[in-house]
Image 1 (cartoon, rainbow, N blue to C red):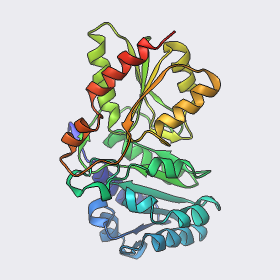
Image 2: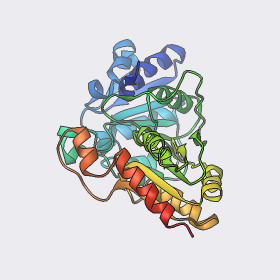
Image 3: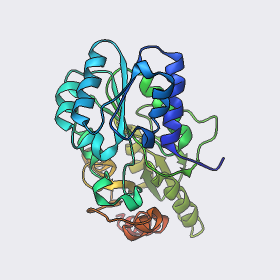
Length: 311
């Protein structure tokens, strides 16, 4: 298999967890077929609750189950999982630090033809603002499996961000995901590309392309945005002296904000961002990525620019 849909893998992993643990409960919000949470509902109907288009109620119910000792997975599209029920997440899940795992699919602009109203590009900003939340953006199918399982076995609130389409598999069977630890995909000395989600593959391709120009790039897969791997970021700043961040999210509040804050406080270096600066539009995913500057080419150009800024 060369590619896989993380949301389908999430659904299959939920079923496996349901077989293994009787304390797992799943709540969904009207889009369970699209998130593949319905697979859990088919097998465990007594532990599955469809709240329809009532996301505030979905998060409140999730909090209620968690306060009763259950491990709860709540799933819908990223725009509906974060924006609409934010107050319920903040007061009923984050503040009491409950064991609720929000797994949002259809994040970013890769929803394509669904248009701007369905594109969740502010979600990392919202969720990283909540103290105690672990925020994870898997880069492929194998990492999705491990992230979901890590969330299930780690007490506390999680936000796991998944996209809509199938994406390339970049990890082998021996890969080990660790919460709060960045993965050095490849090493380099001239600059570091820090990426998450679908942009990790683009970062790898960009680094390969730049190597043919004699530019050596370290590539970090920063799957855990919160808590971020401070030491990996500082090592990148010290060792390479320049950083490019790459994310399918607004520049403000996501990966770039996290990396920039850590570097500026402890080891300032030039930083460039490959990210969104505003809302997108309806279109095919590949065309949207190109139009809004989220491609391998954009990363390579940013690496050249950030290297030119090194003192």
